[in-house]
Length: 268
Length: 280
Image 1 (cartoon, each protein chain N blue to C red):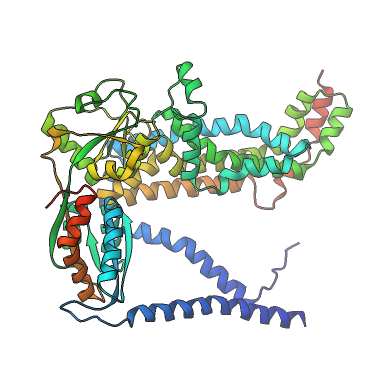
Image 2: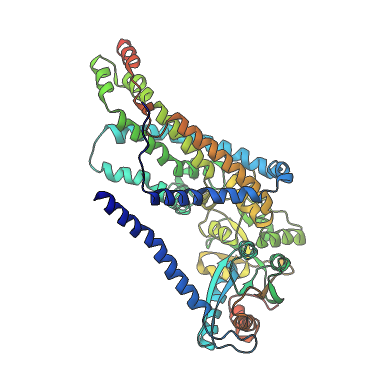
């Protein structure tokens, strides 16, 4: 008797994962079967996944909404992370339709994996600025101030795009910073500054703007020549290549330009 | 007498096998990706050595902190009873289940320059921001529950019988603690310390949030792996493997000290008691 009951319970337990798989499979089919995957022209619908650099979070969230309004039936899923992270995920086979990177070398690594559908298009640029806590306790007014001994300055590590840009700024201005920390992402640099742990941090102009009142931006005219370019491209793995290309056109076009400019991005 | 194996339903074995594969397969997959010809140069680069050395130093310091504060905490939780003890125990164990980044934020608001104690520490001339001390604090924060948990469990298992005998025979509180209680739970203390060390070695989120990342000062091995992954995945994989090997050694050591369900903690303490009683 007891044996019997155990067995049935066992069967039921086994059914649970099976049921989950069935549900997942059905929903995946639903996504695949969505209409409107013609190769050219304005597609009416289609669900696309956009992998975008973390610094694009605000403008791309707005752009995705506008795109959905302009293309009835279209659905844009956004995935924001560090560009290098996203590139690694793409190369390892993550399903996505569009990739927007914060620098060209990261896009290049995706191109080398032969995942790009067409040439990448540069759609925005970004420059660096010093972020300081709102009350600016160390009295930072220039890059030289950030290099003073005793000032806790935080930068990105050279392995990530914002750190590579910071190194180029140092080179261009001949100022040598002695950072107390080299963070893995611009978000971490901003966090250290807005919490008051650091006196200054070298971040993108757009990050300072997006942070609102949490930090104060100190413009660096001497760093104006160090420009990060943001390329965007549709991906070959896309099931909705029409919608993917439409989204790229939308970002590169006037609507995209306006939103990006409002977020502080420069023209390509 | 040989213990006859309990016959389990077959589906239990199947699910157990799937579960085991789920844990083991990713490690195998990672080992397969290691660039063996370049393994040694990858893991002995200057930044890798600095990170490993820093990790070992800070983890040892954090383990020491855990022992110094964790042993009294476990004793208080296991041997006394007071109002709110259950709540206190839950709070102490909280870092175990808390996402480390949350721990980092909490530490920032406590020991940070603008944190609860930041002003006081600054007056005392202590500057924790971006220092190795911040790393040790992060590691101790997440590792402490491991020691408290394993030691408290052992203390409850061995019970108070031998301690009571020691006390009746005239041993002072300190003598009972030193000659009876601690020797009884020594295996659990060692395995708890080893687990704390392992947890400290793997600490990532709280360190990243609270301490920063600078080679030789705050960039521990997990942070180095996270950073290398951006540009040099081969180095990241090689260093990851080092951490896996260290983790396996550590977990193996912890289990040797206290076989699961084994009677190691219940060793008869008679000689200890006798000596305790004989002590002045």
